[in-house]
Length: 312
Image (cartoon, rainbow, N blue to C red; front, side, top):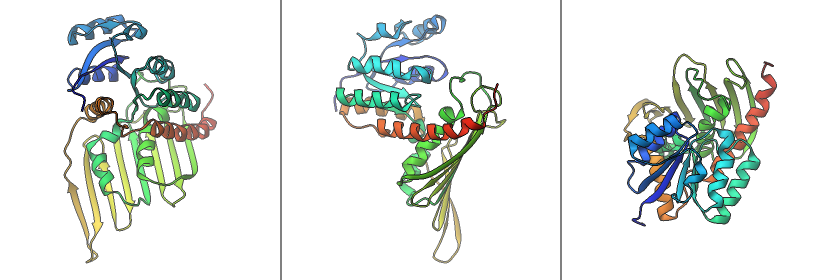
């Protein structure tokens, strides 16, 4: 492994971006050299807290970085990522990779041409419970996903499908090794101009069915996944990083097990992985193709959902 630190900057220091700054200031192998945001007050505060230069214009950071973490609104992902990729800077983009497939394809081609690390921030792949589940899951027959939370005015540039459901889309695609046969989806807008609650039913060619529900107008915060296979099923709680497995024994008994999971902050693992991929020149766990595939399914779901949206 290359022992040199990776000079990295963070673009966008809103709620999630501040966690990126915190972790990249701590992660071994990362050297946080700059932060950028249009909010000068927030920039000055974070600059002082972490003793790192602040840039109002992200383009002014280019001479200092060999990598960046992009945590800006989805509509800006393509513009910002393209700027850095064109200048040979390794790039981490929070999910979704972009807002359109054309933009995603553009970044995929650019990263390939430049031979740069481009990682998409599907953080649930780095949830310790999911990483454990990946070793247990063999042939899923039915998957049920619930991802719900209270309304927050912070995110209104995209609806709940690109904001929340895309996490579960990515997880389901990583678990089911089969092409999609059919997608049916519904959703409605309640508090914003985009869909605030949505449900998608995905049928795979191998017969597996996935049912995904996402809401950002729920009273409770729920992040759960259930997977049913022959003779067993697993229940996973993302927030608690916990797995319960029920399985049938040879004696026709049902055994319930609470599986041991080594809990680690998923975002810390994800950003450490990005740094290590740059240093080791290896392919990320969540590839740019994975990010594009999740976006493609999300856009198909949105295509069906939008016909049900009331006109505001």
